[in-house]
Amino acid sequence: MADAAVPVLTIDGPSGSGKGTISLRVARILGWHYLDSGALYRAVGVAAGWADLDLGDAGALVRCAFDTEIGFREDEGGDLRVLVNGHDATAELRTETAGAAASAIAAIPEVRAALKDRQRAFRRAPGLVADGRDMGTVIFPDAGCKVFLTASAEERAERRYNQLKDKGVSVTIDGLLREILARDARDANRSVAPLRPAEDAVHIDTTGLGIDAVVERVLALLPPRTG
Ligand code: DC
Image (cartoon, rainbow, N blue to C red; front, side, top):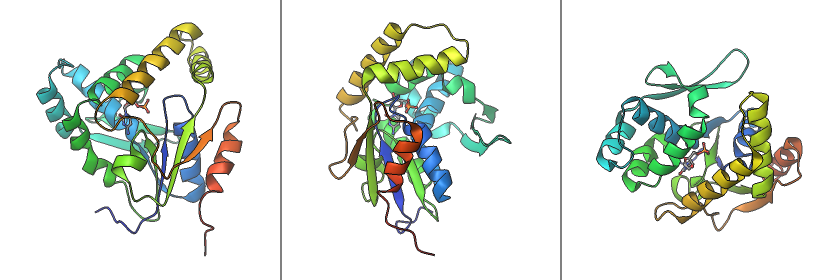
């Protein structure tokens, strides 16, 4: 049962802003739980693909959002693995196809509603770092600390390019930049829970900043810990 007394730090922002890396680092430093809400949308997108569902069939996608089993576990190397209906789908979840499917289904209000309680259930002692698009606005509006991370689209495309190059995937920066801009526009313009900062969020522009510098700025926003 989620407990409203448990502290929550929300970290929202567009894809490639560094949310995932920063959120996980901060969660580990604090010893708090971590919610990768994008992984839930991606998991439903992947499960819909496995079941050959039509991305235009909202009813089927909502059922899929309710029925898909999604689990997280840490492997021996400390990396987070995501299990979808019992299968390790970590690599598949990171593909552009899964990202595009997630972005499309995330625009369906009933899918978002279906995933709401699952997200809130991550709020467990001693605390939660929640990473996504609407963590501070919709899922945890009462969070004690809210961050909105940004970075220029060019820098986000370059970060993604370097990640994919390391994995041996051949892509161009221009192609990635176009995809990022299209995804930003879709996420910002949808009618339900569009990507926008909470009014009380602190904005951090990560363009040109290293991971450690951003982690430090985020930690500095939290009240000093006692005990
Ligand atoms: O953060 P990500 O790239 O893994 O997210 C994948 C998609 O899921 C993204 O295009 C938007 C959607 N999403 C969302 O609508 N709300 C969230 N809280 C997290 C992700």
